[in-house]
Structures are given as structure tokens and as C-alpha cells.
Length: 148
Image 1 (cartoon, helix red, strand yellow):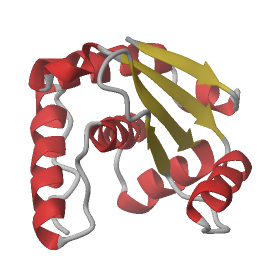
Image 2: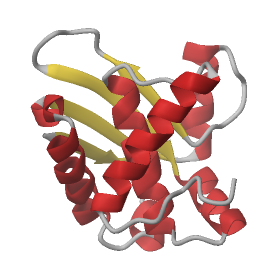
Image 3: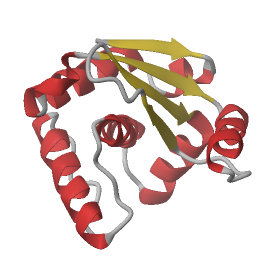
Image 4: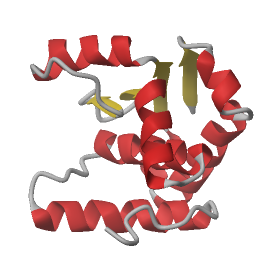
């Protein structure tokens, strides 16, 4: 289950059907990784809010697209994810891809971080990117790494 909090109302204007997208992401991720039957909190915020989180928890005083905070618990609550609207919109425009596809990618990316996937090394990045691509493909979303 994903509990969504939309802090930045601009998400509703930029991405109609936001709640349906969240449901689609959860269904595809849970089909691929059964551990996603646990609770996740998902914050749709703006760049200012994510900049504050990035500064406070990662020591990086700048906005980013998505942050994940695993709970570290074996059962129950899996963790928190925050996604910044302005950065997500700008990245989608820069890549010339639909905002829905990019938001789905960031949600799935954040979810995979919650269960231990990472991209600190090239090998880890390849494994994580492959899993993201598989889940997104099941949603009808093109490979976000195609052409990189």
C-alpha cells in the first residue's frame, strides 16, 4: 500500500491521474517484487521541500528529483519517498519524454531503493537499471536508459 501526500498542488495540474499512476506503479512493482505488499509513504513536493530534505539528510544543498528513506524494518512500514515536481517536469522536458513516464520511473526508482537496490557502483547501477526497466516495461513505459 502506498500512502500519497501531495504537498505541491501543481502536481495535479502537471500530471492528471496522479493517483492512478501511483496505483499502477505499486501494482507493477509488487508483481515483480512481492516485498512491496508493505506500506510506503510517497510525498509529492516541490524543489524547495526536496532541497531541504536533501540538505538535512544527505548534506547536499540542492534540489534533486527523488529521495528514498528506507525504514530499516523487517515488517510493516517499508519507508518514505519524496519526488520534486519542478525537477521532474524539467527532466522530462529535457529528455523529451512524457511526464507520466518520467514520474513512473522516479517512483519505481525510489521504491527499489527502499528494498536495497542502489547505484553506487557500475555493477549495482546495471542491476538496478535492469530491474527498473523490467517493471516499467510491464507498465507500458519505455526504457528510460535507452539512448544513454
